[in-house]
Amino acid sequence: MSSVSGIRMPGLATGMDTDTMVKEMLAAEQEKINDIKGDKQILQWQQEIYRDIIGDVKSFSDKYLSMASKDSILNSNNWNTLEINSSNSNVISAVGTSGASNIDYTFKVEKLASGATMKTNQAANGQKLTKTSTLESLGANFGNGDKIEFKIKTSGAKEDELKTITLTKDDTIESMVKKINDASDGKFKATFSEMTGEFKLESTQTGENSSLQIVNTDGSQSNALEFLDGSGKRPNQFSIEQKGENSKIEVKTNDGQTINLSKESNSFSIDGINYTVNSVGESKVTSKQNFDKVTENMKNFVDDYNKLMDDIYKKILEKKNKDYKPLTEEQKKDMSEEEIKKWEENAKKGILKNDPDLKRFMDDMQKAIFGDNMEFMMSIGISGHEDYNKRGQLSFDEEKFKKALEENGQELYKKMAGSSDSILEGVNSTIKKYIGSSSSIFAKKAGIESTASVAENYYSDEIKKKEELISNLVNKMNRKETALYKKFALMEKTMSKLNAQMAQFFQA
Image (cartoon, rainbow, N blue to C red; front, side, top):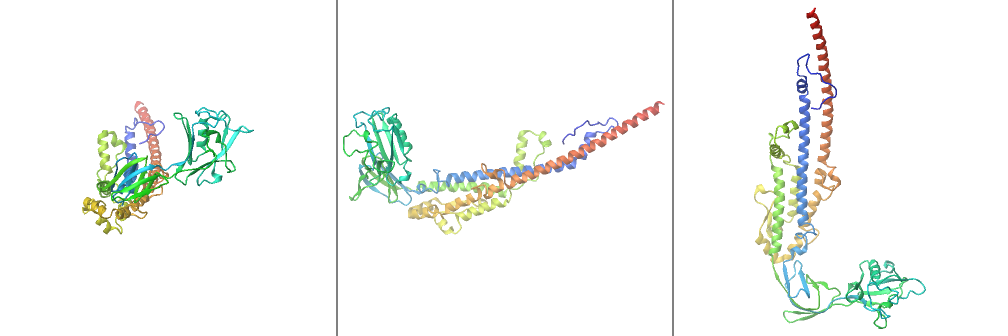
């Protein structure tokens, strides 16, 4: 009970316990305030539990439905049942994708795909290159001005996209490299090796269709960097268009067939297998089917899904214990921290019993998984749990799933995760419907951290209403308290006067 400003008169004249009497007179008002504070506390607990559920759903989604996760069940790599071995991965390595067939090939890499390149370690005037060599000392032709301007054109580049590079007499090899790279937009790269003294300019695109050319600002052929080439060859490599080259790879199958590959990139895909060529040399690449990893990943998904559904279903079924209500501040004064903790654990039970949004979430997740896919899901070993107490959970037959992978893994992947309307994409969409944004269902109900909904949601609004009601009732009780104390003060004053008169009367 809040105190009232001013001096309170104790019951000296009347002999009454004024504070106790006022407290008893305000008991009904205080009880009403305590009840509303209890309602507010329950709302806060409900919001906290909801936010814990939101966090659990998000963790599940981030682990299994985010392409950035190593455990993502939407990532085609995690449906790959083909284990590939390269006898020399320094030459070539390979990774299978879902549905790829077994291979047994010998690769002989004779040449890697390369980008268009211009390189030199000596200027036209015979000077060796160092990173501090000034362009003027290397014989750069600045003409009558004090600068050289040019652009670097690569295959497919549009003239208006090319950036002008400006060099001055004070520029060095090191500063020129930086200026070139600043203008590249990732389409070419300049480097200088202090070890070999070599300056190199190359396109990032590889293959015979890649090109690199130094041009004037108007797009015409330029001799701006001719001074760099000390080879003596004509035409100068820095003044004409240079072209990249395709790789040259010989492949022999296990039945003796020979295939010659010429690829523009050192990374390419054939028959569902992604190859990466690393160096010249020879390597035998073989494979075998292994269904254990994909099956284990699906089992983990089912286990974590079941735990999530179990936690939510328990909240829906949990009975409320009416003997445990939120504690008042007065009650907490007489209890230890451990006693308060245990009491509140019991008081929180059942406060989300039969929550309609949680029930809808479970129903929508079941529809996303089964829906019109019941027959297919059962054929791969996934069905609803037979135990009624495990409502919403999945039953997983590992052997049946493994057999389905073996018989038609590509079709299984496509149905489960390999298209925009796949079963697991449906699960992903359902989760986003509930926690995907500040306008999602659970966000509107309890709020999601780091979104606008954290302060604007059903529970936060209801809590504010309770706080306003509590404030109004407290103010009303304070006014009544003040009025009661004034009345008792007046009574004390009157009785004091009467006592004084009586004393004079008996003294007469």
